[in-house]
Length: 144
Image 1: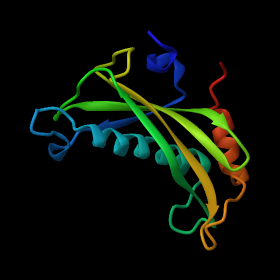
Image 2: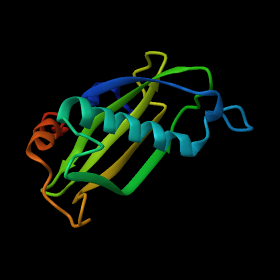
Image 3: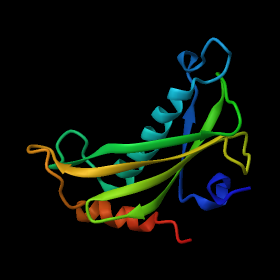
């Protein structure tokens, strides 16, 4: 099993639940929904651990790249666990490693990554990652 698929290689976990609307006509969670799960787990971490104020923060993270690999299907109704870590941390951007687990499995149902570039909310120009968020991201940095 690759390191990205192993539960042991993630720092932070959050319970997620599938919703009725997540299933597609084939009876499993539609591929685009995984990106919503990934976004939820990363933003929960930023809010809870980094103190991000999504409504008033002077700088915000915008997604500039994302990817997902699907390993095992999931479907409504299921309780899931979203997993989070930081793959790469720069001055103005960060790449997250994210995964979805179910049924206490050690192997992820899906793995992915996405990159946030931090920008000034007012001007839209790139800016340094705020210190409090940087500190939280550093704690979640994957030490390979």
